[in-house]
Amino acid sequence: MPTRAYVLINSEAGKAEEVAGALRRLPGVTAADIVTGSYDVVASVVGEDLNAIGRLVLNPIHGIAGLKTTNTLIVVA
Image 1 (cartoon, rainbow, N blue to C red):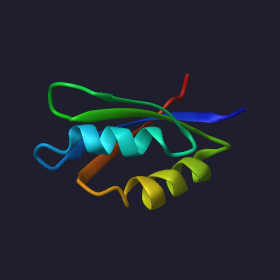
Image 2 (tube, one colour):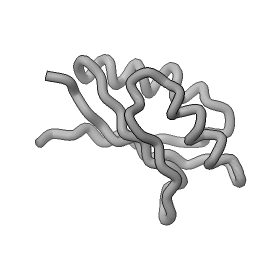
Image 3 (tube, rainbow, N blue to C red):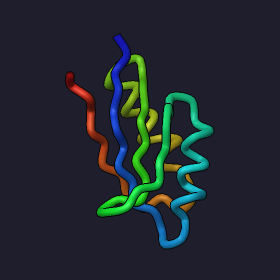
């Protein structure tokens, strides 16, 4: 069964649209929405297992220009 997660993202000022657009182009990202509140973007991601989610977040997601921080929430139910 695939593992799902939400990635809460803070971006640099004025970069939320660029970050969300880059996220939407990544395999494994099913949605990336610009939001209000404590975070700028929320991405829904899916992977084969927890390790796949970790690799997705640590490699391509953290490499996006304009991204400052992430907080990953693994779906448990």
